[in-house]
View: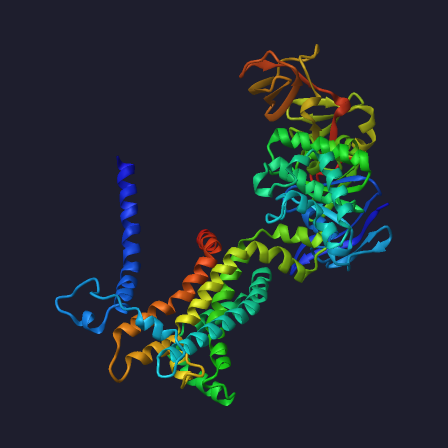
Length: 360
Length: 279
């Protein structure tokens, strides 16, 4: 059991505020991903949890017990670093067993645990090697093993996959997820990669400038971003934003964006009427466009096509808006070709143009 | 062709360095085994007509009336003083360097001590003399050890700080999470990783004390604390100088550093190399 609570936690270096006072609960057994652009304070938060840095104010509770004054050695929290941080002068087996050696665990018990963890991670054959003789992926496996062997209350991951190539990253991502499903240990994972955040998390915490912008289940955040920052940060490619003005024609509320008019679905009617005639931003994900709808004129121009095989990403100019539009499969289009486009208005988002906050 | 030429040039350069170092050593050795007559012969002959090792025998014998007693005593003093000063300096420099490296902002102290280090030694002669006199440490081992610590400590601290700076911090943080206290991290992680430079800088520190002449000359008055460089100088002074004897002392005096260097060779090469890549 390990439920982590941060209460009014803040961190300042001199006059510079890195974390504004924030509250966060990490439920027992959850996989919480802290995500945000670099400098948003996510790594600082992780270091505070680990005890590698001291709080400026607030408290950190582990199962209702205050731990923020404990030495990192006494917290029973393990961490995996981006740089692997293996002990270069020790073999893989010694790296794995380091914590147990410090805690004077019996030798037979140490060996049993090391063997088991090595087996799980597929590094049994590497036990007698030194870290310098390992590849990046193997090193990160050892680093994960070093954390797992301890069977800690909480796992912390600080961008563990950032130094690996794309394929290995995908592989290890799945392994981390599988490990979590198997052991159900509380995990806190820091990344700037929204794909990792979406695929791994039970709970995503989006941060910016030392503040939690939004937290929730991955799909919740994907479907209901609280502002344009989250909307553009989560999801790839970033959500398209079109400046516009609310507009009622024949009693039908809609949004007028340059020469385009989008009819609002019923669920936005209340929010739109509260907004009055203040300018809005219409958010549309690249995947939420419809190509060649029956009713439309070819008003958009294709500028560029990026083909990956399983999908096509079109850079499009639509009445002065440059948009990313993604379609599954292949699209029969050429640069400078005019195409007809519509949006899936059910998937449309509305934000206040001034504050960037989602209309409600 | 160009590559071959470069290789040849490189070997020539290495040869030049080797000859310039070994040449004088060789000459010193030949002097030490030549009789005085051979040495004074004109025209000069490179090899002695008779190989005479008696000076070495005299130097390592403790019989009264021989220069050996003086030499061996000075050798002992030198080893004792240089080794103690190095060990004490290491003991102090390690935590100091760790602190300077891990807590930026304290650098001022280090730069201050290095600035003082730049001042010519002669400026410190009087103050040091008075301090040693007050403490009753003139002409004692301890006095010299203290003086040499003041030479070695800033140097060692500087070398080690640079090495600690180059070590990745994450490893230490990982060790903290693995259950080590702050000082245990230093002992079990940082020091083992810094071992190559530790050995190399300790050797340099030791040589600093081993070769030191000026302070040793001024702060010692007789053989009870006099070190080898001063004693060698004593052999040249006064009466009939035996050049061969001085040469033999020179050869013998270079033996202990040689052994230490061989012993530390592996770490020395590592240390010099790693020191080279990181300021």
